[in-house]
Amino acid sequence: MTIELEQHIDPQLVPILEKVYDPEIPVLSIMDMGVVRSAKWIDNVVQVKITPTYSGCPAMDVIGDDIVRAFEEVDIKAKVSLVLSPAWTTDWITSKGRKALEEYGIAAPLEENADKEALLGGKKIVKCTHCGSKTTKLVSQFGSTACKALFQCEDCLEPFDYFKCLK
Image (cartoon, rainbow, N blue to C red; front, side, top):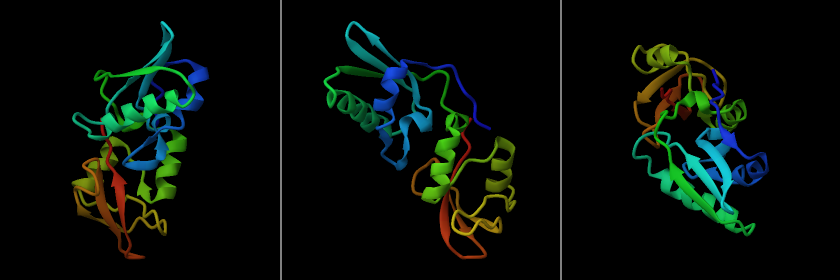
């Protein structure tokens, strides 16, 4: 389920923000990831507020720098600040973002209860991003980053990451 949280984003700034991608998942723009909480003009400077995907996420510094650089490329000064509340949730990933994850080879997050059943209960409900089978197994609670788990398909035998549900 995707939740549309109230955001205060000047529509004219969206095309620039859509050019900034998550450095750990380069197919997801920060807009599709849902980390941009606001972007507006204040005293001739674009003020952008972003919410980290989890506390201490190392990608946030890079994302902040990339936002500033994207605006500099069009001769606009920008300032980025972190907003910690409300905490980011995978529900903020857009439908477009979920599709991009799947096409990139990362299974999109399941709903919270299903996520627990897949990660803790051994249920075979995470769909393989290679062949579409749900005959998959958890290999490791942690994948290439802390927000992902490593799964393997028991049909095509390919490994793939699963983006964990974060609430």
